[in-house]
Image (cartoon, rainbow, N blue to C red; front, side, top):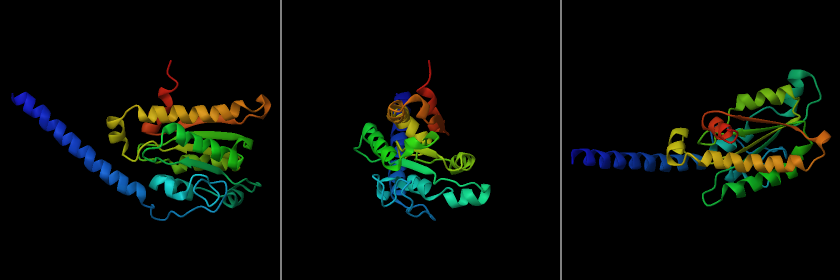
Length: 214
């Protein structure tokens, strides 16, 4: 009897924690991260030219497209005639399927001319949609801006809650995103295809790796 009561109590505590985390996570997702502002480069999602509006990106998505080097920054640091790095981000919108979000990415790939770049990096974010900006900056400088970062938010919860609530969501989102990007690359002649890399941290790494297990 005591064991049953303890189990019920633990479940109630867990549900309350998840409920509170969800409310907080949703509220944070609607905010603009301090210092973030709408990008004015057409090469970035959330810009006035984007098919994925600024309001749809979520807090971490808005932060990601707002940050990072521009072509002028890369030119100043390297002395080369840099291109404007492309950053594509699809936000997590309740009621929109991962496939529909991936189709937004497909549309952004076409709009930005991303497939004409030398390097494409699929970055899966942590649970809240966070991407390591410094990691993306590194290859943006190394490639002279001739690169694309593609990512898609699958939750607004911190990674630990996102995993415990639905551990398959990151994997499903990654599978849809990888599929769409690979489909577009496969349409190109082999000699004209960009190099494709996959990256992620925290739950993002889990999402990527699980799609390539034997």
